[in-house]
Image 1: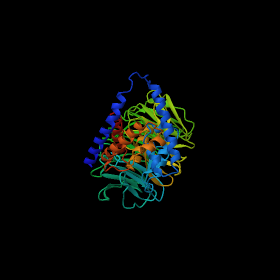
Image 2: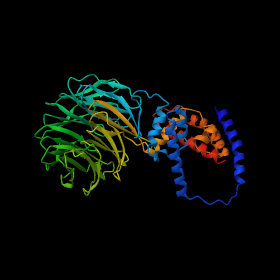
Image 3: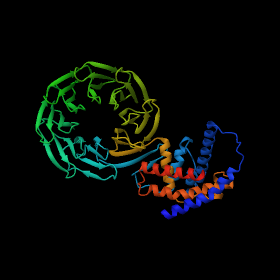
Length: 525
């Protein structure tokens, strides 16, 4: 391989060196081409290349792909991403749903699998390598997000209302019947039974430091437990109706509980004492969350949401503007903005401190049931009963992508933890009881990925005559240089890509960048 590369480089250097000498004999007094003219020329060239590739799709597909490899920014041509996808799909058989390309969106979908009844909860572990789901089918399944392999915990006796990972990703806690259980993932065996509730356990969560567990129950109480010993530390028993939710503050020192009695309460973990009670809502509270610092709480009821101080219960700001019941809400990671979604088919972005409405994200055709910020806060994802997932730029509110549409209502959506500069993973569950992973990146990155996939399918380069006919390169020297550069750089591309999986965006992006750099270097000799 190394010898082949060196021979190719030497040959290209020798042949293109003659071209360089010829160019140096040309008159130096050439009228300069300014940047706008150059950009316009490149756009026209890309337009011509994409259209040429479209016509070639009906023929042996390799030529269409080779033409698209010459485009600089095919994503800026109308239909460019779709043509790239079509050219790629014509050259390979995609394995079922696993990493199936989605046209026009730049998303790839991995169908991890399905439950036989309604999914109640889905969550990533701390690094996004695993997903856990719980269901009315009485099962809890752990999914490997890289391989798609699964591990099912032994069946519960009742509906599993909740499941989530321990902070270190080694254990899972589930809530089913009147019991919460802590499971070791590796052995799939129960480590601890938490069984002192007198009603259904509706929620169970670890503290961020991993020391404690809190459970919420239909018996109107929430219990705090030692996560290692399984002993009950405190019973929080001042609610007057079912406790629907209980979560820890980011510092693990306080707990927020929400009840059907239309109140939210904040408790001290160490003492079990009530810190404050918030009872300004007139309807059932649908959402209750701490901000990332744990200093304020957001609660939503009906079409309004309130932000209040966790220590005093005093109101910080009110969020008014939705025309339907708020179904979901989340703080951005920096705590400066909130996104809400509602039955009015919209999501809205707000300023936390002032309560000002910043953006309305409109486009869904049915209620927007779930929402999330990307880890870097630059994107918002929304999921709707219309079966679609939409991505939006946080600052501008502009829609960036739409995908899905064949799954029924989307019931949950969340970004994978961490941030990859090249692509993002999004987890969804839906009414068809299928758990899906969506891979999304911006259109320029999509185009580069698809071009790189096309380059990987063949070592063929367009011949001089093909470059003349398909690329309109009338100058024989220009066509020769293009062919020589391709022949010399394909081995560089193959070496850079060696061992990469088809869904590895980063590896394909690196290989494509190496290939492009090689092409430019050879054509400039």
